[in-house]
Length: 317
Image 1 (tube, rainbow, N blue to C red):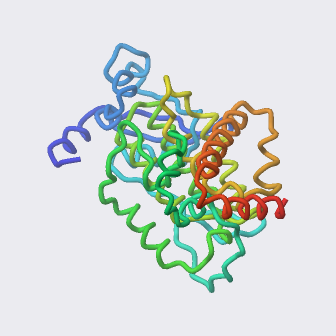
Image 2: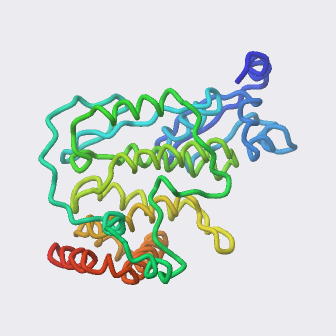
C-alpha cells in the first residue's frame, strides 16, 4: 500500500469483525478502504447493506487465525504462516523455526512416478505413440488460468531460508498448521474474491509441498496431507467445464505423484470416509494415478522399472 492510499485507508470508517467459530470468537477491527480490496467486502462496506449501517461483519465460518492472516494480508500484502514442528504425539506447529537437529538416515522409499518416468527413453517412436493425456506434471510445472509469478515476500523468503537449512527429514515433521493456514487463506481469498491473495496462498503452499518431496508412509506428514485434502475438497467449489479447481489440482497432483510411497493405513483409511470431499479427492487421485500408469505402460523403456514400482508397492501393503 503506497503512502497516499495508506492515509486514505486509515481515514475511512473502522469496522468491527466477529471472527472465529462458535464458542471461540474474537473481535477484530479493520478500515473500510482496506476491506474494499476484496470485491465481496467492497459491496458490504460501500453498498446499501446492514453491514455498512452497523459497521460490523461476521466471519464465524473462519478460524480466528485465518481471519487475522487475511487482515494482515489486506494491510501489508503478506501474511505469517506457522512453521512445521518436530513431530510428536500431540505435537503442534509454531510460527517460529524449530531447532535444527541431526537428519535421520534416508528412508528406503520406492521410486516415485516422476522418477520412473525419468528412466532412459531412447525409443522415440514409442514416446510418440504414448497416450495424448499424460504424463502427470511435476508441481513446478503446474499452472492455472490466473496464476502469476510470486513476488518477493519477507514471510515466504524466511520460510525458504528455514527449509533450506533445517536438518530434519520432512517425514519427521508435523505440517498440519502450515498446510491448513495456507489452505484457509486460499479459501478465504476465493470466497471474498481477492485474486492476488488466492495466487499467493496457492504458490506458497506449492513451495511447501515441493520442499517435502516424497513422504514416508504412516508418518505425520501423510496424516497432514489427508487432512489437507479433506479440507480443500470440502471448502472449494467444483470448477466449470474441463478445468480443474487450482488447489484441488495441487493437492491431488502431489498425492498422485507420490502415491505408492504414501500407501499405508494413515493414507488409505480416511479415503473410506463417506464425506463428500473425501470421495471427490479419491476420484481425482485415482484418475491421475491411472492416467500416469497408462502413459508409463506405453513406453517400453519404462516397463521394467514400472514392474519393480508396482512390486515394491504391493510388498509394502
